[in-house]
Length: 389
Image (cartoon, rainbow, N blue to C red; front, side, top):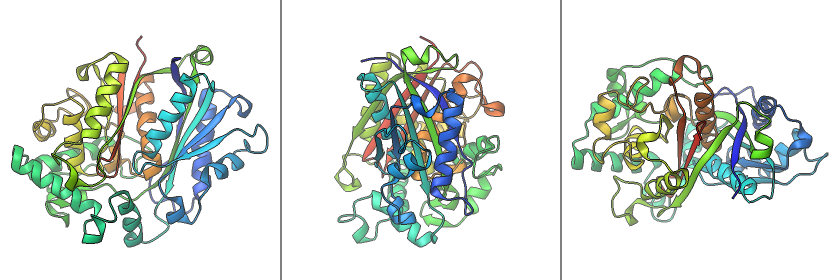
């Protein structure tokens, strides 16, 4: 396979963007990435869009064609435009598919976008749509929700490993601290452990501040072959990428305190990159809930199983810690427009490796990892990028 690089990155503000349309934010992110790469529309060979459920959120399907149309690529170069859906991993899977299209020699320059518009409808309907990522026949029909399934994972982790409520809260505290440094984050203010613990229950033991918000937003990347990337001084290499699957429902898993899809995706990515977990300088992991981040940092090999809560308590995952995690603010503070998240995570890693992350910059970062999850762990993608050969 050929080497593949990221040569452009762009992202919109995340939040409740009621005045913006789906196509507006998608085009904004794409134009920012294209301008960052210093290319024109004529250079683009293909377009991949990560999106979970525009049909349900905004009554619009065929979103790849929509974006290609409104950025002018449908009428000029008539490039292929492909939409990818994998729940919360939609953007990450789109990124992997774009990577493969260049690595295989099919294309030389590909744009990857991710977008979701989630706040134009009521919270009840929006939460019902996000629950489509879990098993409708064997979970939702019996009253399970996305939050309640994460609550089951949290309770199991607490009972098995002694993870405390305060340790869960520290994940949110750290991510909000990071988000306060990110001008594109939905929530740009710090919070305390007490704030988390006093917020209302969503599904015991998880409270409002343990869960990520509903969000609007978009992100985009430009990927290129080595020949093209050599013309760009700020190119970041895709060192390794792994995707894996597991059962869509929790009840079929051998252990709900581990997401096997993450474990196997990480193993494949590390092997491809030729590195170990301890070589990673900065990571963006999937924190749709505080427990999902704790499980992720264990499954990715950053900390021993059962020690993730203690790592949060000791701030080992904060800026200045052993392995800074979710410097963007993560899903919790940056926001979680589902289709955009997997791409936004990689935008943050690219900015960190280029030294462009401002006040949240990890000094000397040379290798970064992005980890995305679909549903409660039915799909996982791990991408490793670096600026050091």
